Amino acid sequence: MTRYLKKCEECGKYGLKNTDLKCKYCGGKLVNPWPPKFSPQDKYQEYRIQYFKEEFDKKLERV
Ligand SMILES: [Zn+2]
Image (cartoon, rainbow, N blue to C red; front, side, top):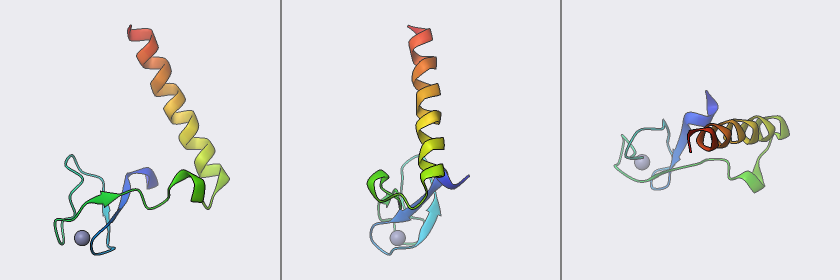
């Protein structure tokens, strides 16, 4: 479930992704704590790419 984990840009606390991407502690903006180019785990990145690929395929089928 780590792909739902976001980090607050303002206070640096971690929180779960929510609809408006707002920090529950300070109301700051939640951002991805691991930008793709700094990804510490290749496995995680691979999984994410596959996830987006599946989502993309689904969208293509719908059109
Ligand atoms: Zn915050």
